[in-house]
Length: 363
Image (cartoon, rainbow, N blue to C red; front, side):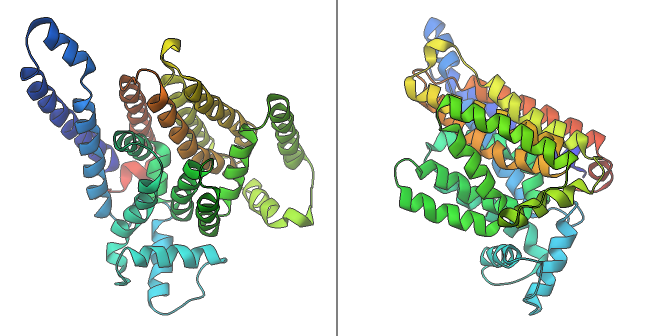
């Protein structure tokens, strides 16, 4: 089965279970007006449907082909060398940390054949520790996994995927338990240095409006200068190298940048509810999410690096949106359903348009 067929099967299973749960909850809820009222307020079908989709996707992901995913074969080769005793794999320590993290979820088996299962577990488990109610964790997972970004994290961007789980946990504890947040942030950066930039962007969103706008326009100037002029700053040379090495590529992945940013901005727009539903805390989460979306715009000019920034920001924005919805005076779970539908449409379009995804079996 190719990726398009896999997603369709998962959707059909989720819909079937959601409709089944809707039937049983409505038939035992009463008759007449009470039954209709219960139908409108009933969140069980959405939870059942999204939960089943997440569980089924994780199961299929654990048995996926090692041929699927542009970088999967590379990581499989590195992991094979790592298990053979070659400790000099990759060009920085983050590869070693990531390969050890994979082996941890194999209980030390160090078997390339179960790499997809360990990959999925290593990506998902850190997110379980974020400060969020259980039902909103389910919504978070569904909107993350069924997005172009989630597919990339579970089949391609291994190190960044591992890193972002710890970053989200750090952000979730940042305002309450700073020491714990710092520990998770350090672990996140050890897996992938891009987490430091994403966290810095998150901190910028919390600054006063004038200061934020100042940094925003500076980032536009910085990217313009980077594209058009030769810049060497020794203090941040490694970061500059990461950007400049992508500038050497042709911008043949423009559609990935478009799809990634479309996924990001769409979940923000589609999650907006009626003003009367908002509380002060809810508005705060929404403002941070909107500012993060704005900060991604200048980087979209950069090939490869641009969509990697969007990949890093997407889970943070999604976390803030889930906190926003859970903090409203009246929860509106229907927004989650609308966001999920739009995400699925995007990845189905991506699955049809990508030669790799059309021609390579997922399982």
